[in-house]
Length: 131
View 1 (cartoon, one colour):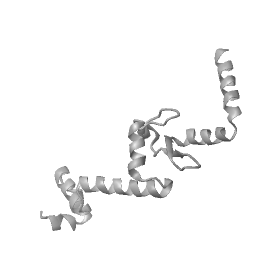
View 2: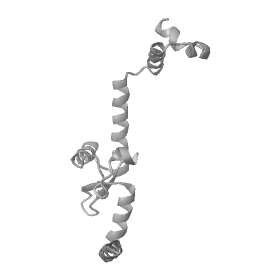
View 3: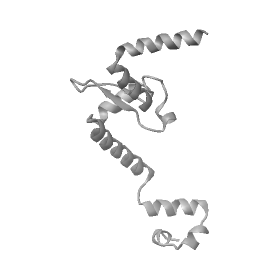
View 4: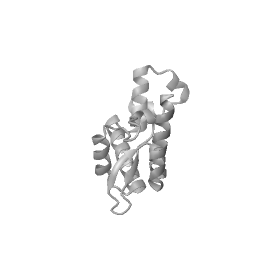
């Protein structure tokens, strides 16, 4: 079966393909190699990072590697979370300070508004863990 015949094959013919022929069919249909797909994924991620956080992708990705792809708060890996880490930025300089999961970022933002609450909650947790 030629490349054109495989791409234009009706559904009944596709179901009867061997696994190797099906892989060729998928590749011909997508017209992209796995390397091209990975490259496209990285480009989309770079655009998303730039638009969402206003941070150039190399800076975000450099910080992500420095943190070993883990949240600075709970240390959960980005793959465990299934979602990209959020950027914590200095409000004055807009410099990237670190990357956090959504839960830790929410807690951090809340505690930043009321720093005394963080100390009180730490004392509370420490007290009730001893009981």
